[in-house]
Image 1 (cartoon, rainbow, N blue to C red):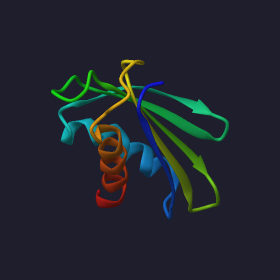
Image 2 (cartoon, rainbow, N blue to C red):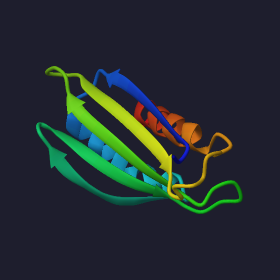
Image 3 (tube, rainbow, N blue to C red):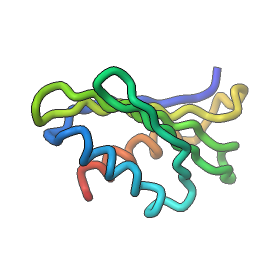
Image 4 (cartoon, rainbow, N blue to C red):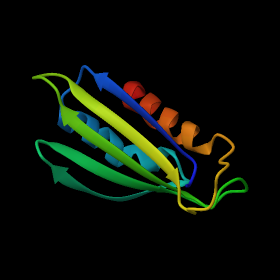
Length: 107
């Protein structure tokens, strides 16, 4: 099983402003590319791809946004190594997740 990392947080912000922030995220992180998004229930699932680096063959990143109230949104970020046999990621998946969470609070 490939190395992975996941975090879930609730933001005091509506769904669409968070989606807009995530659409702009790859502009500030050159090794991350936007793959696409689709509606899921009353929320949204967004996909990103981490590029190949010295420590990794790339990562698949999934961000699931689900409204939990009129002005709150639950954000789940999951990063997993693209190579299924890669069991050590040297902290790359944790870094991907943390960078996305920081970007959602910083913009």
